[in-house]
Length: 282
Figure 1 (spheres, helix red, strand yellow):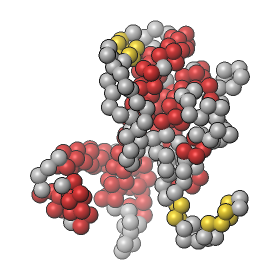
Figure 2 (figure 1 turned 90 degrees about the vertical axis):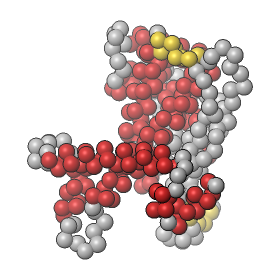
Figure 3 (figure 1 turned 45 degrees about the vertical axis):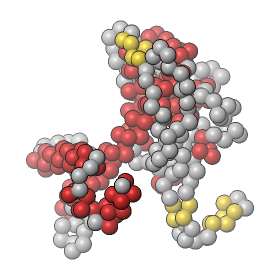
């Protein structure tokens, strides 16, 4: 049945709107998000000459204005809504999955969780929340966040790339027209780059003095011209969510939990298998 839905959607997407099933919930959620985006666009248009700060919507509206007389301009509100939707959806899913892996690691490695909490408690004033600038004073916490990304490797294969000309990499010749899928796992689990590549080890991101250091082989967002456009936002979100969760709660496995496995559920992203945990306010 799912295969039939998939085939129908590829042939005639509009048909799916009229067929009952669980996919209707996905359509409803999509419509809700796109409605929210349109409201934000409307607010930007109404306050266009009042705001000093410029964001993606401002720049897109400017491109629409510049190209409005072109007969086949790719810049219009429909494409803008879809572009914002894609950015929103991609960043939400990947950040959420990475945090799920992070919480799983913390309940499986309670000594690491305790060390993160001790560092945060030593630095923060009671009642204070962690901000992104605090990462410079929380090297171990920052190292744990990076190790979560490295070890979980939720997108092991990067976006496909098209070779524009014959290219030689070391002794290998890649012919023009070849589609290349970058294998980021080869860098994130390279035994020449990491002391214990198949072990969750925050020390991978700490120097001998305990200072945070990021290695060149750390490429969960890919690299080069096709690097993830949301890299900076993702780094900020992951650090803030993770550190404040650690500051606020103690995380445990429920009594009787067993057979917790670290092998992921395959798909577009590599998700942890379903698990339960207890979050106890500190």
